[in-house]
Image: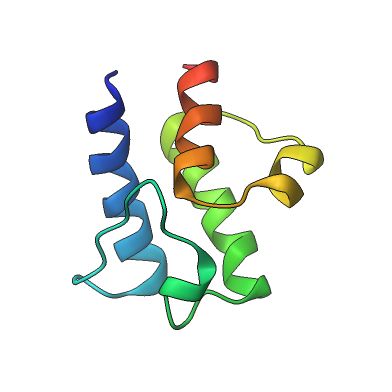
Length: 79
């Protein structure tokens, strides 16, 4: 799976979790960029991403991720 395909899939997951078809994530997207992205939705998002890609994030990875680009890096390293 290419990085572009990872981002295409991440866009679908983000749109589903936040119920917003206008969301377009990129390398620099953070929780500050998406209105409803709070701590509870972060848990839902992580679970949805793990399920979609068949990966598991460690707690350390979850708390140190600064943006969607870092999330994509971790996904790419596990698939």
